[in-house]
Length: 360
Ligand SMILES: Nc1ncnc2c1ncn2[C@@H]1O[C@H](COP(=O)(O)OP(=O)(O)OP(=O)(O)O)[C@@H](O)[C@H]1O
Image (cartoon, rainbow, N blue to C red):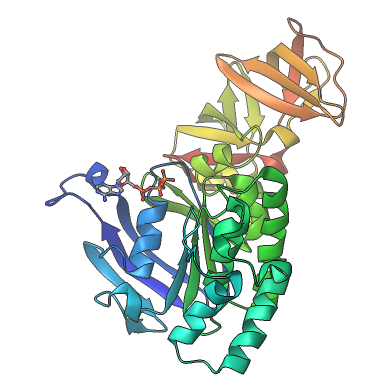
């Protein structure tokens, strides 16, 4: 296992990039700790696969360096980087048995047959493939084949890291859920460094200890599920994580308050200090923390109720505050669509952004 550092890394597929939009990856410096379980999360086209391929050596970055345990590997080809990579679709030898598929990476490195047997049986048991070890891979369903691919990625204990690029795409939803949990258990047991690429927030948040969120070629936050939920560092993290995502409401900063559509939300001393010198900001609050106040209550914002849905465990209500929609998840909801309501944004859960970055 290795600590992976990306030092001032950037990548453009086109020659002579001149504007930020020409880069598939914008300049980044970051570190992936030895033994960590990471997810790389972001929408299609944000640069996840490019970043993964730069770590494995399939793509050479146009700027910056890649270091494994402090050693510069930027110019090393994939086969000399000691990385295992699992792709979206199974990459296995159809004519071999499941056992031989799993044993292949170990035989290649000259392991003794008895050691191979022990390791293959351990990995097969973890992935519930033990009963299939003697079967030819060609006869198996696609999800069993993908389990073999996962096994081949995990079988070598000496790799710098195992990289997964959307590995559960071909797996049916129920098995997907089980395999995600399994991969997490395997991570705790084998202590491998894992980087798991996905565009699915549930997949990322259930698998990883640390989720690295990307948008438009940029890493905008790396943190635990709780960090991303409670304190999104960037408006993109706010609305991408959560269902529905964070409410983001433009406001005017004036007289110690955030002014929105005729109402005002008092700033804490910390927020007032952080927003000093700004006259415009964006107020962010998750639907989980929006509260309904009494009519005309001090500090409450007037809104119109657009829709209310009873989802069994809670109500999902949509309001309009001025021209902005605001979603709320509420335990109780007495107002109906078309009526007025007053909303309260508790200071402890109200964040402020300027140019998409969190200030307070
Ligand atoms: N070989 C290539 N040549 C030119 N442009 C590329 C190449 N590969 C990717 N790109 C571009 O780089 C950007 C990032 O692509 P990348 O595949 O890394 O994103 P991604 O987040 O992995 O997306 P997806 O989830 O759809 O695979 C996209 O604009 C894509 O069109």
